[in-house]
Length: 128
Figure 1 (cartoon, rainbow, N blue to C red):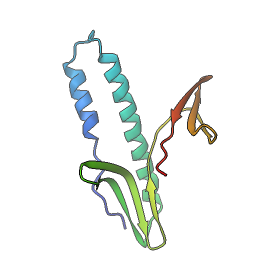
Figure 2 (tube, rainbow, N blue to C red):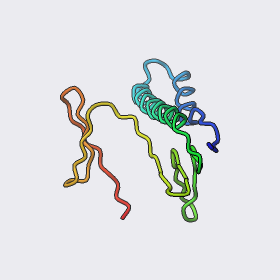
Figure 3 (tube, rainbow, N blue to C red):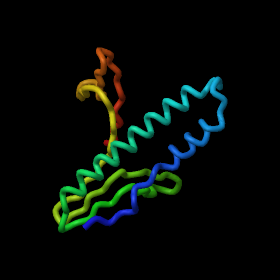
Figure 4 (cartoon, one colour):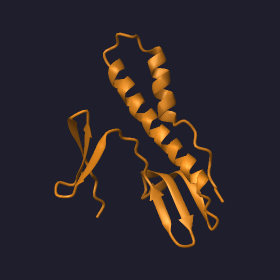
């Protein structure tokens, strides 16, 4: 059984698209906004791709909950892309849509992406 609110286009994407429609083509921050929109759309497409695979793997004894915003403490919220709850386990899926070859460097606690012979590192967050 799948219990969820339908995954909708994120509000941030809609806002960025609206902003781009109103910004002049030569505006100094237009390229930055276009890059942000491109990354957000890639992330949304990644979530949609996972949704497709989850639909092909029925979970009879649990729930699949999408796009959950939860409160932590007085003023802090966090979001879970997908939460799978069964009688045997809970699984949190944080979905990223990153191109290239990914390496996890345990020594320096970072993710490294290699794409077209260029390397870029992403710092990991530790919650211990």
